[in-house]
Amino acid sequence: MTALTDPLKFRSGATLKNRFVLSPLTNLQSNPDGVLSDDEYRWLTMRAEGGFALTMSCAASVQEEGVGFPGQLGLHDEKHLPGLTRLAAKINEEGSHSVVQLHHGGLRSMKNPKAPSADEKLKAEAMTLDEVQYSRDKFIEAAQRAERAGFHGVELHGAHGYLICSFLSPELNRRDDAYGGDAERRARFLFEIVDGVRAATKPGFSLGVRLSPERWGIQTLEIRDVAQRLMNDAKTDYIDMSLWDVKKEPQDETLQGRTLGSYFTELKRNGTLLGAAGKIMSAQDCRDLVAAGFDFPVLGRAAILHHDFPKRVLADPNFASRATPVSEQYLNSEGLGPVFINYMRTWAGFVEEPAA
Image (cartoon, rainbow, N blue to C red):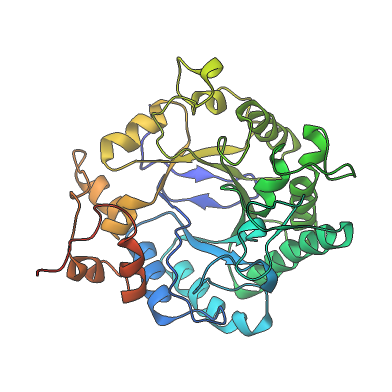
């Protein structure tokens, strides 16, 4: 039986000291120009200190035009390097595998929303072929910048309707060129980035991909095929499935009767590791996820509530995250700055209302 304390070996060479992975969590607390803030440094390094085997940044912008939200961490300019270098050094010092998530907002960008095809509802313009290839190259450049900063690897954000995800979606991608049409051509953007990052970075640099198998017009079985192809190609170390709830059934009625995650755990992995995120709040939840066939849990809410969630679970097999709502003071003690705490107020029932 696999234990949460068991190490994980990436095909590119790194070994994670346990099975606990920090989810890439939006927190809005970088500086307006994308330069790392002290609050974001504190938030992430506390998780590395708390025992996470892999500490991943929030979604970091690969292109200024693709910034998706205020206070987003930047990775698109040399001015971001000093802060990123400081962050990587501390995470690495704690024995955690340091990863930056690479992100382009696409049709959810703040300034000039772009998508594979025009979207009147979301006021997004269709990308030209040159723009598609330019954005692809910006992902690759950002990976190189992350490597220069000292990070151990990067994850490509291919979920939640952002740029890579929108190319995968038949609803959002109605192109008739090499980057649209059938499922294989819609996946071309992602696979060219994977190939480019692997070619442009050194051996041993880890590469992961986050996928979501529903919403934004995504077809679950198509994403399963994308995951299988990633595994077959053997260029990625891991796939991080964003499932919202790891025990839920698919939205697609024709696929119900089993969990959404089971469509991915049955794949032939060929050395690619598989993790999942979604309402994992206790030691038992983590064990259940591994027993269901995943290699590692990806922790969001539990990691917000407990910077040392891994250490607590390893010390107490019955550990469960504290109940919400929690106070501002408590969240600050767990490494959240004022901006992040304010953002958490948008999560229903997470932060206590101040006394009248």
